[in-house]
Length: 115
Image 1 (cartoon, rainbow, N blue to C red):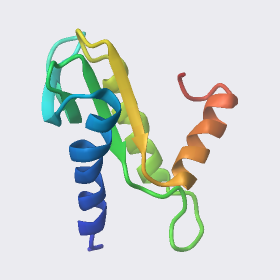
Image 2 (cartoon, rainbow, N blue to C red):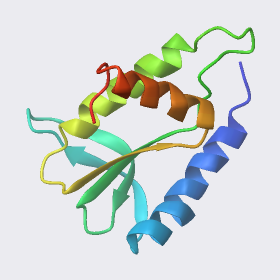
Image 3 (cartoon, helix red, strand yellow):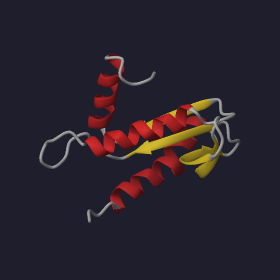
Image 4 (cartoon, rainbow, N blue to C red):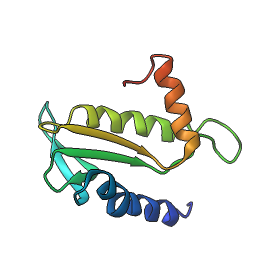
């Protein structure tokens, strides 16, 4: 099993430091209701519960230089929940690795990922 401690540390830093610096309030992991019922636990929910975020610390390519399809599918699934969080004003998808950000920017430009 791969050691993901650095990725967990990076995600924690985004939730504790980066998001509060941008949005001027505290964030923590938390469940938010979904428009169709049920709830989803987001990586970051603002203190006033109006902003939710999913944080990706993954790279777009595997060590063998293949597309990281599993990681990409997880981000797509997380985005489905992000877009359907009930009673929130802002939905944020955070990429800590430039290669994954570029992948999804390319997908968005091609019309295969929501704005």
